[in-house]
Image (cartoon, rainbow, N blue to C red; front, side):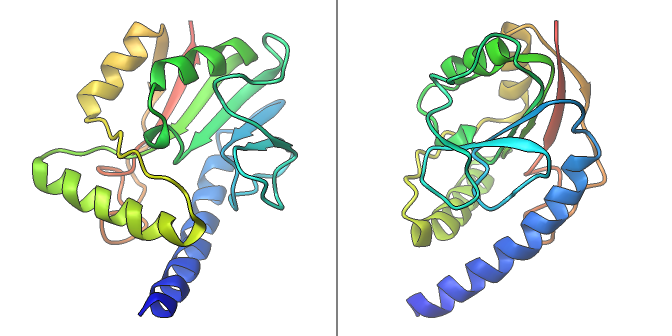
Length: 180
């Protein structure tokens, strides 16, 4: 059973990441930092991951980024923040190293049932990679509040994103944010 799950997750991730990469590249401009790059591998970026993965240029934590202030035009944070205990600290550090825009792709829940389903999907897709799940998922309203509190202006929230079951923009939004 474990091998079946592993094969399914690896194939699923490959298709999902290819579609996501194509989509995110539309918004990535200038000098780009990809936090939590994993196997996403956006082109022409500095890639940082907390794990030592083949695609990472730098191994490090988003809470203490090894870059000078305003080093990057765009920072991409894809499927990372829900793994963090304190999202605010990560946002502060991401803002510090970013000049113009932050692109966040993460998850949203709308009910107890959707929270449970997202937690299960997160667990099943992370356990084969030995990634700890903190299940720190936010509702859309909590995301908006976080952006406002951190002086991030939501300039776009693409709506035509669909990766299949439970992977549409309702549960997996992309937020294009401008630093104020």
